[in-house]
Image (cartoon, rainbow, N blue to C red):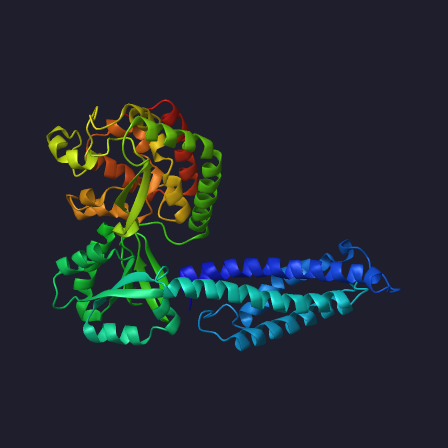
Amino acid sequence: MQTQRQELNTQLQQLIDAVVLAFSLLVAHTLRFYATYWFDLTKTIEPFQSYQWLLIVVMPFGPILLDIQGFYQSPLTKTKSKSFVQIVRAMIGLSMIVSGCVIFLRLPLTSRAVPLLSILIAILLLLLKERIIVNYIRGRAIRGELRERILLAGLPEDIASLERSFTPEQQLLMNVAGRIDIDKQPLSDLIEAMHQHAVSRVIFAAGHSQLNRVEEAIGACEIEGVPAWLVADFIHTSISKPDFDAFAGRPMLVFRSTPEVSWALLLKGIIDRVGAFIALVVMAVPMVIAALIIRMTSKGPVVFRQHRAGKYGKPFVMYKFRSMSDDAEMRRAELEPFNQMHGPVFKVERDPRITPFGRWLRRTSFDEVPQLVNVLMGDMSLVGPRPLPLYEVEKFENTAQRRRLSVKPGLTCLWQISGRNQVRDFRDWVKLDLDYIDRWSLALDFEILLRTIPAVILGFGAK
C-alpha cells in the first residue's frame, strides 16, 4: 500500500513518462523520415500525422505497463539493472499492444522501424530520467534536505516494532526526532517535543489499552496543527477530518486539521515558484532603484535579514528591504510600553525607528518584495499566514495559536487584506489565519491575491 504522497509522486512520474514516450515516437519518426535523405534510401515514409494514432496507445498504456512491472516502486533502493528489466518488459508489452492494433484494428503502419526505434529511444530516456531524479533525490536526502522530522509515540515495544518495519528508503527520507512513551511520560512531553523539533507528523503505535491516552494526545496534535498518524484499523471516531492511509505497510488513521497532500496543493507550490520568478524578473529594476535609495538615505544594510518561524515552526531567514534604522532591534525594548497589539506580536504606530523612505516602503508593502526570494527557495508561499519572528512565536498564549504554523507562511493573507494594522488583537489575527487554513483552496488563494493588489495600492491598513 502506498501513502497519498507516494501515489501523487507516482502519478506525476506517469505523466512525465507519457510525455517521454510521445517524445520518443516523434524523435523516431524524425530520424526515419530524414534517413531517406541521409542514407539515400529509396523507400520514404508518410508524415507524422499518419502515426499519431500511436500516441493514443503509447501515452496511456506505457505508464500503466511500467506500473504493472513495479517501475515506480522504491526508486531510491532499486538497482539500474532491475529498472532496465522492468522497462524492457513494459516495452515488450507495449509493442504487443501496437501489433494487436495493426493486425486486428487494421490501423496503418507502413514503417515498422518507427515504433521499434521509438522503443529503443524510450528505454534510454526512461533510464536516464529515472537516474537523474533518483540521484537528485538521494543527494538531497543524504544532505538532510528532504528528511522529514517525525515523532514516534506509544509503548516502547510497539515503537520498536514499527521502526523495524521501516524500509531503507523510508529511513533515508525521514528523521525520527524523538520517541515518547505515552504510558509513562506526560502529555506535556509530547507537546514540548513537537515545539522543540518542529516535526511534520506524529506517529502513534499503541494497543487497545492505551486508546484513552492516544485520544488525548491526538487532540493535542489537532490543536497544534500537526498531522497525527495512528497505527490502527479498529478505531471509529468523529474527530474532524479523519483519513485513512498507510505507512510502512501498516494501515493507519490520519487526523488532519490542515490541507492534505493533493494535486491542488502541488499546483499551489508550482504557482508559488513560477509566480515568484516572474515577479522578481518584472520587479528587478524597481528593486535596484529601491536598494540604491536605501543605501543613499540611511546607514546599514540594504536587505534586513531575520529568523522567522516557517512551517511547523522551523526557522528560516526572511528577507526584507530595510525600512528602519540600523539599531532598530536594540531599540525595540524601549518601545515595548507603546505596543498597540494585544498579544505576543509587537507593532507601534508611527514607529520612530522607521526611516523616511522606509515609511513609503511600508505603506506600499514594497519592503516585502525580497520575500519573493523566500518563495522561490520554498520557505514561503505567495499566500499564507504572515511569518512571525521566533521570539514572538515563543510568546504564544496557547497552543491553539501554533496551528497557524501548520502551513507555509505567505507574502499575503486574510489579515493583510483585512486592514493589517487595524486588527489590533492577535487573537483576531489568528482567527483569520485559521479560517484560511480550514477553508483553503486555490480559488481562495487567487481571491486573496486579487484583493491584495488594491489593498497595497491604496495602502489599506498600512502605517
